[in-house]
Image (cartoon, rainbow, N blue to C red; front, side, top):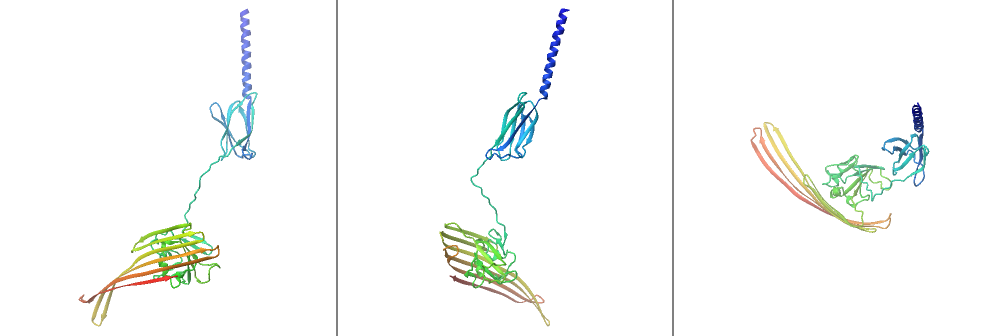
Amino acid sequence: MKYTLIAIIFFLSLLKIDLYSQNKNSENLNIKGKISGKIIDSSSSAPLLSASVSLYKYSDSTLYGGKIADRKGEFEFKDIPLGKYVLKISYVGYKTKYEKNLLLTEKRNSIELGSISLTTITSSTDKVTVTAERQEMEFGFGKKVFNVNKDIVASGGNAIDVLKNIPSIEVDVDGNISLRGSSNLRILINGKPSTLFSEDNTALEQIPASMIDNIEVITNPSAKYDAEGSAGILNINLKTEKGSGLNGMASINGGNYDRYNASINLNYKLDGLSIFGSYDFSSALWGMNGTSFRNTTYSDTVSQMNQDLTRRNKFFSHNIKAGFEYNFDQNNQLTFNTSYRYRGSDEYGNTSSITSDSMNNISGNSLSLSGGNSNMPNLTV
């Protein structure tokens, strides 16, 4: 009996201890923690609005939750189970920062991190180069600018061939130029009048297409231009080298119908003085083939004539330019240039005629040959 009483008392003691332990654990489960702080810029101390804050469990690195900093840069995690955590703070353009070993216990169930500063990410580059191609046509005040330096179709020809590809400009078989139906226009080279056009526009045939940078079609000339040329102004801008010292450019082009041209340009610049010289050669072949048939009836006589026509004309030119330019200041300039042009052509052809009656009896057969050449030297100062 005595031993039974002792056993009962011991059992009741153990039961009381177990109940106390369960009670204690239940109280621990009900205790929740809190972590809060403020995100700021390290240099200006300004709050970082919408900074991202993530809370991870330290034991297995699983994500517990996330927050977005408010307009004051503040954040707060509430009702967090007690334990150990890691905080990750990130913001675009800033280095990511970690707050580790955040331990929430019964005695310390609230952690105030205060101001957490983030530093910006800085990077440097040696040089940034931005390149872009010019459009084929650009609009300006009262003018259109056609960039023809990459016109493959006309690259083997001359300025006349370039103008044929520009809208609103018409060039007839004789090389006469008209703008919007009117031939009363003015032609400039690099924005200035040129003595090359004192007589006619044949000088355009001496300018290789490869030397043209762009052509401005000015239909509404401003006050800086003379009133001459009611239809408008064509300003042909040639390629120029802008660097100091000696520079130059050479080109060779070829095309169908024996169209060839070659050019070389040299330029020497020193301070306000510029000395320039150029030579270009161009050659082109023009041809025509034709056939005609004529039937003539006179009383009882019928005659027929067949003709075959062949014509070939080869044009060539040599052009030499030289001069200098001195700029006293922005508004005063002294320019001297001279040019020598030598143009020529070799023409040849033949015409064969066969005359017969209605019975195809040949009554006549003839062959005529034609040919000739012309040379036109011209010196301009």
